[in-house]
Length: 184
Image (cartoon, rainbow, N blue to C red; front, side, top):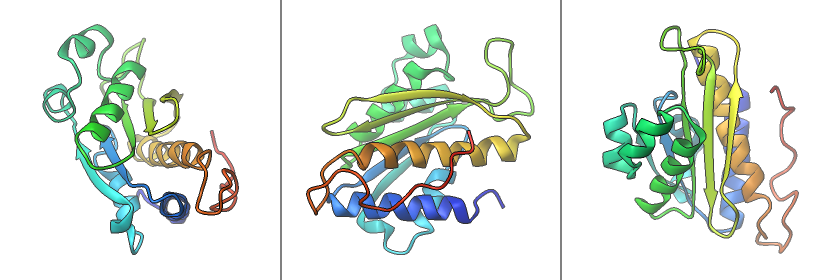
């Protein structure tokens, strides 16, 4: 199974952080194919803070469902930080969520190039009131490993952003407890 206890712990912590701030999240996924949404919805009560998910595997889906400009897809390719950011913005725009995350990458075993090798995954995160964030990671391992690591990074990145916002107790940090050790 691709999802493990660490994913569920991250999703639980994210849910606590979002709930403390009365926020909801949307997910835009490509290479993870809905695994982020699966991790989130494995948590009982997640309907209070998970608004919706978009699985946009093709460029056409990214454009049609998330308004990622075709010119951007042509210029940078689907696996790029500009596209990840546009996917996250599109997920927030096309949902009732105040936060969104996006994942797009090359999970393998094929499809990689010299410029965009297997294991390269780009992430985008948007949270109302904070500056948009993007990141690119290079994961080693097979397709399952790349996808599982991508879920971890996607959830952790959004959790770290949400925890910067004031919570129900008026504090930004520490509302949902410590994060698991970073493996990247």
